[in-house]
Image 1 (tube, rainbow, N blue to C red):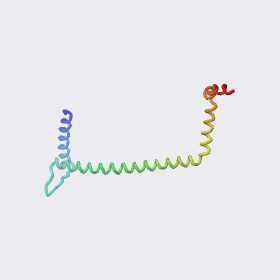
Image 2 (tube, rainbow, N blue to C red):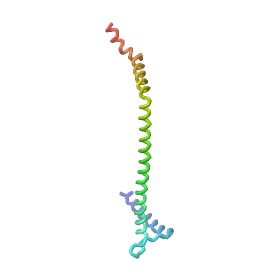
Image 3 (cartoon, one colour):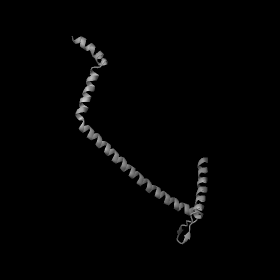
Image 4 (cartoon, rainbow, N blue to C red):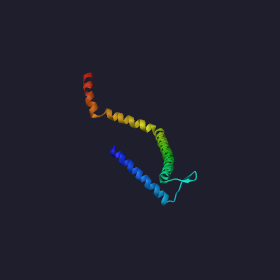
Length: 120
């Protein structure tokens, strides 16, 4: 709770300072109903505008990155399908040779030697 209160006090001080800085450095004065807004109202309105711009930027960035990732994924899938469809005979022959090699291995022959002697 102590850390939360310290964070609130720091936020209040920063908002007051930033509101005054926006007023004095940038010369930005927000007018509503023919009245100048104070430092608190300035920073609040500018913060809302900043949050809206951040949300819009996030949506644009995610949609652009999402589109790029979707395009890359579709391209890789297409290359995979083309590769498999072009080389399927070689893939089947390779799998058959791998299975035959495994069948002729010493471990396979030792495991099946018991069955071979009993059948003779």
